[in-house]
Image (cartoon, rainbow, N blue to C red; front, side, top):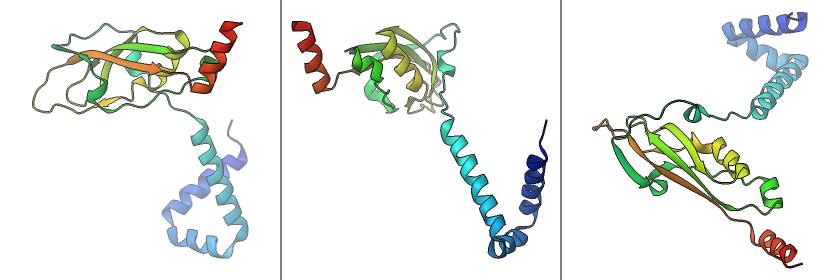
Amino acid sequence: MVSKQDMVNSLLRQFLKRCPLLTVCLLLYCPMFVQRVAAQTKQSHSQKTNQQFIDTKCLEDKPKPQAQIELGVLNKNARLMPKPKYSTEAIRNGISGEVIVEIVIEPITGMIEWAKVQSGDPLLQEAVKKVLCRVRFDPVNDVNIKTGGLLIYRFKLPRHHARRNKHFLKM
């Protein structure tokens, strides 16, 4: 059910898009209008920042496409490789190590077409899954060959956490 206020706001937005001169006049001479526009802008901005988009399309449960070339570890070949966030729970529990992901790259776009996490601690795997599909490689425009390989994410505890965990182990 659409409220009366939402309907008025919608009609006002449509009208103001069609009449930019009126919008300028209202902004200059009507302080209540300025407050209303500012509140709506602030609200829509906070909604956008609160929604965290995590792309997991490359991790969908589908059969692995056939890669014509297997190149081994591809970390250095990535044009964009976002770093996963080391979760506070993993740090608190002293979890470190590697997460190994098998991937197949789409040759024209340079995006990961298919990916599967092979090994690593479950907490670290979750961090990797949140950034994995954003990894980009340089597209190979002249050759349409799917490339396969591995990405290795290494998680190292910060020094002060590593020392503290070693102290607990000695006791």
